[in-house]
Image (cartoon, rainbow, N blue to C red; front, side):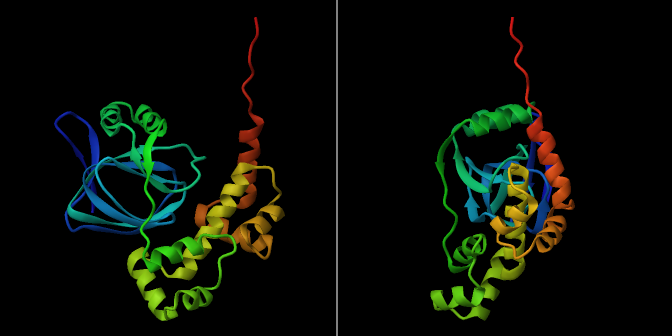
Amino acid sequence: MFGSMLNPSGEPVRFLASGAALPRHLHVGAYATLVLEGGYEEAGDGGRWCVRPGEVLIHAPFSIHRNRSLEHGARLVNLPLPLTTAVSACRVAADADLVARLAENDPSAAAMALLEGWQADIPPLDEAPDRLAEALSCPDAAPIKTWSEAEDVARQTVSRGFRALYGVAPTPYRVEARARRAWRLILAGGLGLAEVALEAGYADQAHMSRDVKALTGRSPGAWADHARLHHSFKPTTRTA
């Protein structure tokens, strides 16, 4: 399981012990995970990756995922990111050593350095359950039966394989993806809640409201108020 430790230089780090697994869980805030040593597999809202040293997992707000260690476990640093972080992804850090050094005393500066550039994006894994995860995240996601027939795989086989890797059945995964998409649209501003529901793929606003509150703990109306307050604040420039 995940734990905390302090290395000889005083750097706060996290670790996933060899052979350990962390069940599916939700993180409210956005954050980045830089792997320092070892590696681990994560399966969640952005897909599934096997992350190695120098690689970074970006977690959008309300990310839900499960983890398991690879080989000898993993040693890593978690860094906070802005609430507006759009989507979960995996990338190669431009300067992992710099980020690790900054994280010793200033996690915010380390996160800033991390966001300034990347060497490359890393695509998620591409087995059948991973392709299903991508399909379920689309606004116009096809029924699971339709997807299974197109892949020429029995629906029961698809569901079992998906649950084994992602820790959840396909249907609730799709519900969460749609609620997360609606939340991002609300936070972006510019659309009424009925428009957001339609854009996110809901049949009605009431259904969207239930799903968004279940995922985030707050109603769409409360998030819309938050977005309006955020967008209404514009720093003024003083002139001589």
